[in-house]
Image (cartoon, rainbow over all chains, first blue to last red; front, side):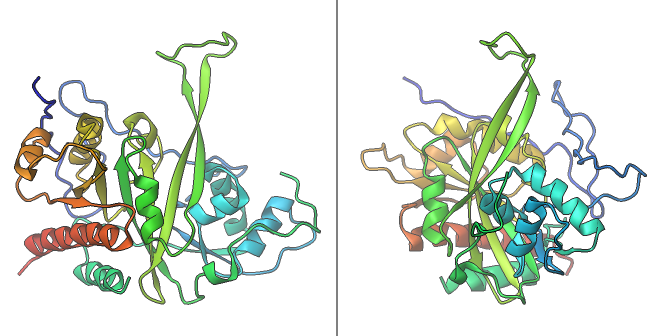
Amino acid sequence: MTPPRRRRRDPEQQPPPGPAPAGPGGKEGEQRQPERLYILTGATDGGERASIDLVTLIVACADPQPTATPEQSALLRLCRSPLSVAEISAYLSLPFSVVTLLLTDLLAAELVQARAPVVRKATPDRSLLEAVMHGLEKL
Amino acid sequence: MDWKSSDPVPGPRAEDHLPHTARAAVKIVIVGGFGVGKTTMVGSVSEIRPLTTEETMTQAGVGVDDNFGSDSKTATTVAMDFGRISITEQLVLYLFGTPGQERFWFLWNGLFEGALGAVVLLDTRRPEVSFDVIGRLEERGVPFVVAVNSFPGAPRHPMRELRAALDLSDEIPIVECDARRRASSRDVLMTLMHFLHSLATARAPV
């Protein structure tokens, strides 16, 4: 029996330095990458929406007010020290998208602060990679 | 969700709190088929007990048997286990173990965006399970390494054969590991980091 074999695929497009492009349609009927979805909140003024990543670190700016919803209160209490959105989702047993929605409101009300993740760029930051390597060596 | 004010707030144990100095986080994604040991690997290196985050995805029920006949949409809950490693007082690394079936992780918005890279965890008993994942990573330009989880009794392929079967280019590292062991899982992550570093060095302007 011949073992299964795979065929290599090519990148859809080499990303040039700068903002990530929406690549053109792939070859051979490849589907385009789906557009990033955004959570719609009450405010639909077309303004910038918070882009919340799984590893965005959230810190509460204030203790929950009596008017806060139970979910908001729980989230604010959780985030007295920094916590990733993924951890918030896990501890509150709420789906990522629901946490994103909660955070969008809390960010707008300036009740929490978001510390953006460090992302891989076209030219990765070698000092960042070295910091991670150094940290792993200590494990 | 209806927590009473008297209920203890669910949350991290005291020792699982991040320091207030934590400013930024990076992520690495571990992909592989069901039962290949993703959660084991996450758990063996994580400083916290692995946690689970989930997302509910609603898809048009195209090509899905609709046994209930009541709704044209199906909601799928996709769970991901993850762990955490504090790198410095400021920097935190998160590891996400995600199901290998592309229809799941492709739908998980933003999972690979900004990820440093990925580890493809391979079971030599079923290497073909990972073919599609590898292809998707190639298409999206996500750098990755392949780690072969050594299950007892699994066929041991010479790395050269495995590389050929996976049609990997020569520079992509393939390593063997025991996902249960912290040192071994750490070494896999180090292999990925060295690979990313070499890519960065090759691309960096002189």
